[in-house]
Length: 184
Image 1 (tube, rainbow, N blue to C red):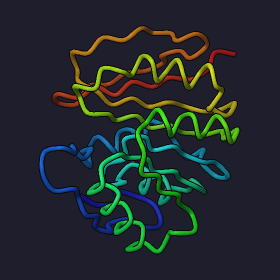
Image 2: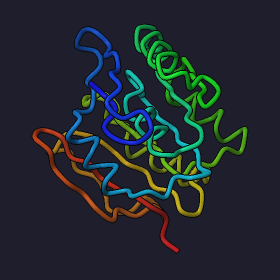
Image 3: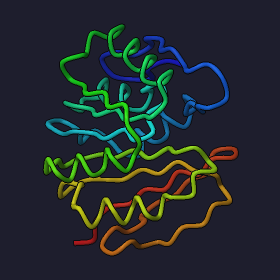
Image 4: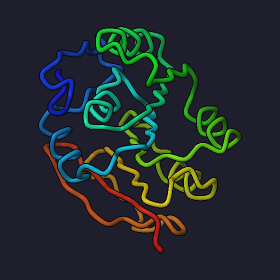
């Protein structure tokens, strides 16, 4: 696993050992960030279910200013810290060891806004619809924000969660990437 593009291009990242974490493949990561473009300057990202921190670190490499990594697994948190340290980006990151519900509540309590929220829960998780509604109801996206959801290709989701609307989806092997943004 490596950083695909940007100022940390080709830098290797550690992965979490075992089967509890499923890293996003480099080709999927490249497709996601190519699709999003280069509108990150001055923005923050929430990497929920961060695993190794792969997606958030790619965003930092491509110009996002700040990333909050969230995972409830101790081994994942350890690997995120190691990857952050290897890139020397500690000042650009916060690492929260907590479940996603507590993390979302903390974001709302602190009035945090994100340009990018990446959701890649375990495929058996089944709570993505609730998370999308929470994000919309608590206004966690900034005005140009995007929520990117990685899940199984066969999983079905609505095209709208209040004002949060699906605008694109792509399949890669067993994964499907869905892109949501707020309707104007």
